[in-house]
Length: 301
Ligand code: GLU
Image 1 (cartoon, helix red, strand yellow):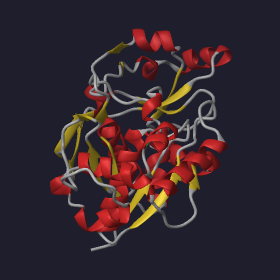
Image 2: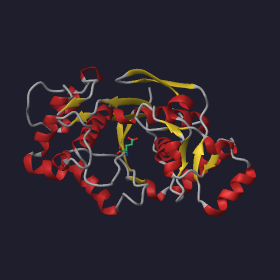
Image 3: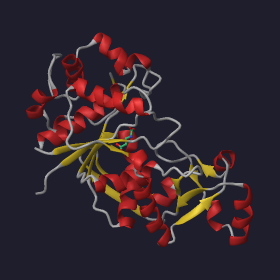
């Protein structure tokens, strides 16, 4: 069997919160306990949200927790040429079209039933004629969508078992390049997972529906499929998903209350890797990691 290569893929748009640390710790343990490698990619595609100082902070925070990675980190903001090549390949396959809809029009043109709660775009710009497009190009800068088929995509998740979605019905044509030219996460992630030799993707369950899109893109681009494990989400006490705005669960605040081994212990207890609260290092958890122990359902912490 080939060697496992896992990855950290944080978005440096602020300080990491407990949910990010949870994903990073478990992704690291899954890879290291299999004797695998671990790579780091900074998902700083969005120039409006990401800053270089946040990238440095993310790396310091991972190190503080006791997590390491192999090789130099990869910055998505420096890889537009590589994403452009994959984009052109999909264009050659006739799958890309310009979408001129404004945000308001997009909302009007969709039925809100995607599994992640997002709206499914009805594809209205797909059927514009060439003269219509030329007319619109004069006044608007389009985003670029990929046309998905009326077909089911499925895979077996390491934790959640078998997962499937009909792309046209459940997801709809999705954006691969924004109107300001920035390539979308969905495209960058499949290109980069391949380029970085990633064989195992462990991340939060909120990305499950992205995984189905990514698997379909891999198939279109002839890329191998890594294995996927989607972790339950940690919820705030009132059942909400943790967000960057939950300042008290941001690492800067957590560091005031916990040492790194105490925080790792809290996460390890939530993951059922230990059975009582204790301070412990990621290294000490390696022999205790097993997929079968992990909880499958989202839970409050
Ligand atoms: N950058 C994404 C995030 O921080 C994770 C993407 C991924 O794991 O593919 O939510």
